[in-house]
Every structure is written in structure tokens, then in C-alpha cells.
Image (cartoon, rainbow, N blue to C red; front, side):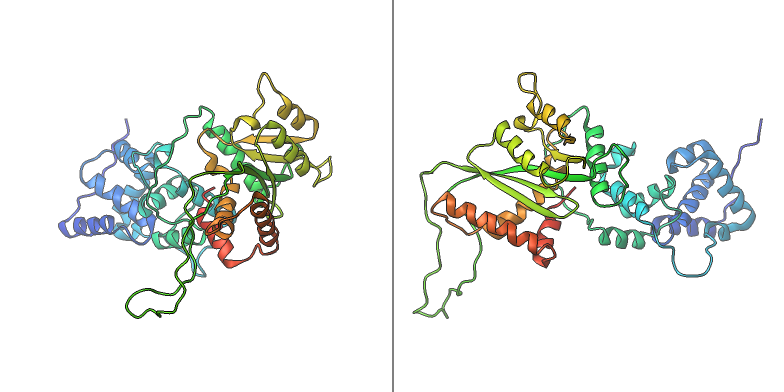
Length: 377
């Protein structure tokens, strides 16, 4: 039987130095992990238990201990070559961002949220990157539009096929973003579809420029505009069927009086005419009943199979995966907030003109800010 591996006798100064490295949590993740392994061994923990705690292999722990016994603290610091810092590839950045946005519990870890130290340690342990500092990870996430945010009330999906559906939607987004080359039987064009509404004839809250009140106000100034009080909803409601072409970053929209399976298929047929029949397209939508194929009505599935279309459904209670939702936030911000339309014709006209403006000004800074802040998928 092979002899058990233990770290050599650690002096008081060496133990305090190891403890400072582990507690500091800054600098190289590799150094932090190696110091943690050595410190646990000095505290009497066996190799198998150290490997379990540090999420590493037993052979890796043995190598670290042997190197420390031979070379001391010099073995804790990685030997990097000269030159500029290593640039992370696009697949590595995408994987880092994907793991950061996931829950640690999804990877079998007993944590409720990621810290920079835990995330960097996990990325190195899983082989996503060879090494990454905490500050480098912070900058990489910031460049990817990921920040540490407070949790909001959310309805957790209980869909048994949650992982499969989510993975398929994310794969379609990767194709649309040009990160993955589609195979022969995969879609080349991806649309995100959803309904926005109901659109009521009512005054919407909003913001505007107005003169300040207080002691120094001008006595001849006009009074601040107020919202009209309404108690009835005349004229019924309308619904906006909207679609986002991921490749072209172009928004399409049709206003309908009702939102049923017939109107949904009419809008889908319009989208199908935008590309040749031999071009396979995918439509990402939620589990709203008019989008589904049921035993009583199989029109959606029949139409999709006949017209070279794939319908990709988001998991139950996970419509936030649909990127069209962020476009609705911008629509509400730019077009509906602070309005009080008298007729549906006037309201629909303003929505259509906004869609035209939006498609012509996709690089507008304020538009990109509003959409980026609302987009979580």
C-alpha cells in the first residue's frame, strides 16, 4: 500500500503566510488554490478530503504537496512566460459569461450565488481557463454586460424539460449571433415572436420636461401637465404581434384586434415570405396556447413542417429567455409612456412609426442602453 502524502512540518511564520494568501483572495487563482491545499494538509486533512473540498483530483493535490515539500513557497506561484497577458478567446468568454449567469447549485455546489473568488476557482477547476485573476474576471464580465445585481421576484420554472428547451434556445441564439456555424439541417434565420398588450386607450404614466415649482417659480408659467383620470375603457383593446429578426436586428409588428391561433399563423406566414422557401428558419416563442399544437388543432405544427420552419418553445414560466421582451421595454419607454391616445388608429400609427424609426436607428445609444438593461437572455 502506498504511503499517504502529507505536507512537511510547517513553521509558525509559514503557517501565517499561507493563511494570509488564502484569506486575501486576490491575485492569481492558481496560487490561492495551491495555498489552500497545502494549508488543509498542514491541518491534518487527508488527500481525498482535500480533493473533495477544493473540487480537484487527488493526483493534483498530491503534486501540489510534493512540489511544496521540495520548493517551498516558490511552488505556489505559477511560472508565466513574458509577453502580453493572454487574451481569452470568444468561446472562453461565452462560457465564462454563461457560467456566471447560472446558479452554483446547477453545478452541484452548495452556494446560493457566485463570488469572484468562487467563480474564478470553479472556472480553473473545470478547465474553462488555465488561470484568471479576480480583477481580470471582473473586467471580462463587465465587458460582457454582466453585473452583480439584486434579485427580483421571479417565478421559477417547473418545466421537466427546462434544461433541454433552454439549451435549444441558447443554441439558436448562438447561430444568430454568428458564434456557431449551423449544420445542414439547422435553421439559418432566427425570429423571436411574442404579443404585446392589451393596448388600451388610457393615459400612460411618463416623464417630461417642465418648470420647477417652489418659491422661485414664475407666477405666469403654465401649470404642469396632468394625467387624465379615466374610469371607462371604450373602444376595446388591440394586440401587437411583434418579431425580431436576430440576424438583421430588425423589428416587425402587426396590430390585431384579437390574439388567437389564426392571427398568430397569419403573422408567421408573413415572416416566412421574408426569406426564400429553401431557407430554414426558427421561431422562438413562449407556451401561450395559440402558439401550441394541440390534439384538437394541429395547424401550427402542420404549417411549420410544411414550410421548413422550426418552432422552439421557451420553458414554462421562462418567457424572459425570449429576446423580444427587451424590445417591448424600449417600445414602452419611447412610444407609450406619457401618452393619452384618443383612438386605436392614432396609437397604432405611433407604434408603426416607432418600429420604422427603430429599424433605422439600431445604433442609437439610448435605445441600446434601454434594450441592454432589459435583456437578460
